[in-house]
Image 1 (cartoon, rainbow, N blue to C red):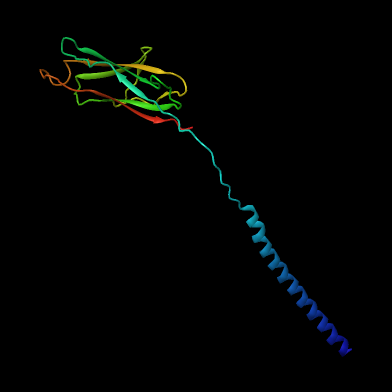
Image 2: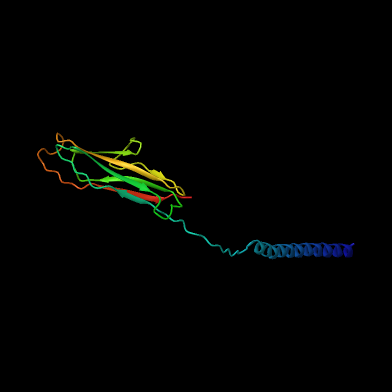
Length: 174
């Protein structure tokens, strides 16, 4: 019986040793094959193509300056924004704001109108964002109304001020 126990213990130890060896070997194979499988899914593609950069055209044109006085107390400055020139049309649209820059006092007021004579709100002398589309010939006309009120501001003061109209534009994100 002792012989049988020794042999049995020997067989159990051998089986445990074999199971451990198989487990270690299986883990090693999995780890090695995981690297190979993982490497198969990493690919590097070299893409070549030719792109044309969109031609942005954004033109601001203005008419002659206007003068106002106590007698002629309203003046207009007309300008337009367009997305084309003589030879081509802008391929991309734009978002823009119009800003009136002036160092005048309360006696000068500004109002901005579009070509349909609708007033555009000027908050702190700046419009909200406006847009002009691309791939289509578009000209948007504006009229800045400058009003002099002699009852406001410094009375009896000669006002000689330059007023600038700035248009800040940015290409639309596609």
